[in-house]
Image (cartoon, rainbow, N blue to C red):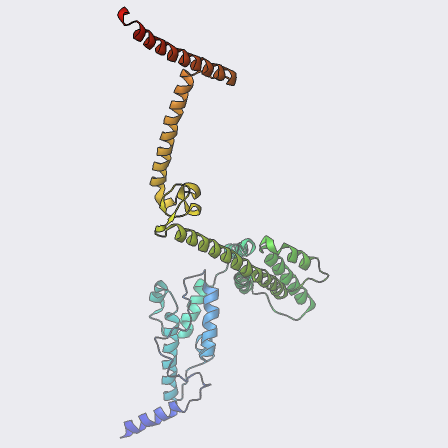
Length: 360
């Protein structure tokens, strides 16, 4: 009875923990939970990973387990056990957010603060090569046809990474303000340099203004210019689409016109064939694409007939010389005279035979 009563008291004490207490665990705070979407790989992404983990642990009210501000109770065993439970949960959250290689090196750790300190000491190393690589990416980044918003957000992400690496001391003196103004001017120049050439007029207006705008103001102005340009393109595309549909419909109507079946009540005055009129005669308007063979045959037949005709004409021309109209009239006169003489001779011959039968 004593153990059961003590257990009930302990459970009652834990259940009375306030949600603002670091030892409070919500029903969703399980060991399988992944509180950040990025996994720690090493020095190349430790800065991003650590910032994301701090934000997530702050939301869960467990940041004290990695910075040592939340200590284990030495007077109350119930709270001490609850602290051990919360500590184990935080360790699993950290291990769920690292790569498999790093997981094997930290899985035997007992304190979340020790895991955090070991990862920071091992991978929070910023040397000149890392700063050089990031700074080179910032200066070589360009819009390259992407949207202004996408280009700006990529650049802004790298700016924040760079600022996190440098970690300049914060103060409120005049020199600090002047340095911040200089840093903002450099970021403005980097943003404007990477823009596409279509924004050259707007960029010139920004650079020649009496007071240079902030990066956010410049981004807002360029975004409005982008929206204005994009508002013109849909109308152009719509006109092109209408023209394309019109041409498609005309092509379809033409095909439909020539693919109709023959009408026996129609007769062409050109080729004297039934089934179509002269305005639809293939010999005049041309044969469709699907009847190339027929058109080729007709062309070959027509060419063959022309060849034969040309040969006959050339043969006639080679045998009969060209005559003038005067020569033709004389030739006809000679033929008529010859015909008349032949008729007279025939008549005379007949009379002679009749008058002098004995001569035969």
